Length: 224
Image (cartoon, rainbow, N blue to C red; front, top):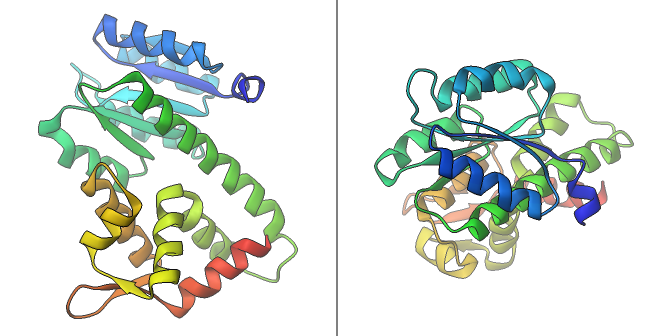
């Protein structure tokens, strides 16, 4: 696995020297190819070099994380951006995810938590690449394929939809407990993504259930 990670390029951006140095050190030990900078302007220039993942602080002097997110998506739409945020700005981090960020992590955090997020992101990127290749054999429009794969690329979203397939229906609290998710805000966001994709819906009493489109999407993904 480490040899595979050496092919994954990661850019770390934070105005705190200790934060950048610590993240770079831990991720290099995991086998990632990592570069770090405390200068967000330099980060904007470096994005043109092409990175698979960008880990950036949300709030920095001058150019902030949202600017870096926007530039990363402009230069390379497939680049995954992870936001580092304080507890007080979690709402902003969720907004960043709506704008295309893959995930966020709140300070202070254990290096192992960030490594776990990166592993999930790498899994998402590999999932999308693998499923898009497999989808070529099926008579589906590109937009439909992209919508399904994007909705189900995230491991937590797949676990949620698989749980609902088995459970039939469930409220938020039971899904949260069953999946053992640390951050309920993230679960809420991912359930909303699935709902917007038309794969899950809610009854009037806010109980979630898998739609017929959701069932077909799972079956299709499993065939790819």
